[in-house]
Length: 189
Image (cartoon, rainbow, N blue to C red; front, side, top):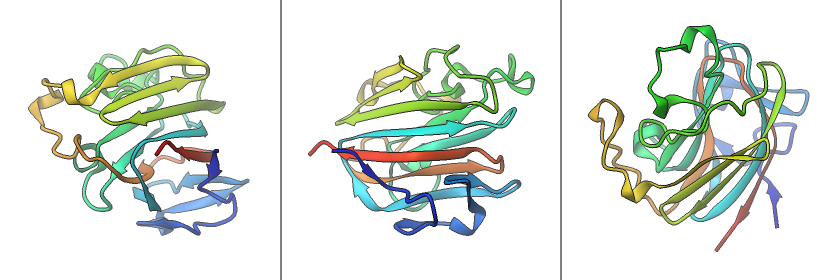
């Protein structure tokens, strides 16, 4: 029941600042020094997403989960799932655990140590059901949480979108050439 949401050629079916991204060798890549959240025109409530991603050294991006189409996906959407080379020297000892790869940004920390080295492809599966999110990275579950139970937020910044029931799926680029390919979603409702 998985359907491709990126055709590997162009941004058909996508919205947002798509000019800040490019298609390289069948993958979506954020252009260097560009960014913003691009997202599917379709909305999803409960779903399973499967994708592959490749990080450059120190690379930073995110998966927009139930994004409303405007604003900062980390706060306005259900969450932004971090896509981050969190082992890079520039982040050592400088990030909150809730900023590590696979974390629900600012809300729930993922287990670390399962990312492949920068420059290698990783496989990730994300399951969103109601207020729960499960993230599996390269075959290991690194996050399994219920966002409705989160009461402490990084920097005490509330996440008003965390209770959204549906929204768009997308990528939240932060000026690094992070790449995504084989992006597929299976709706669960």
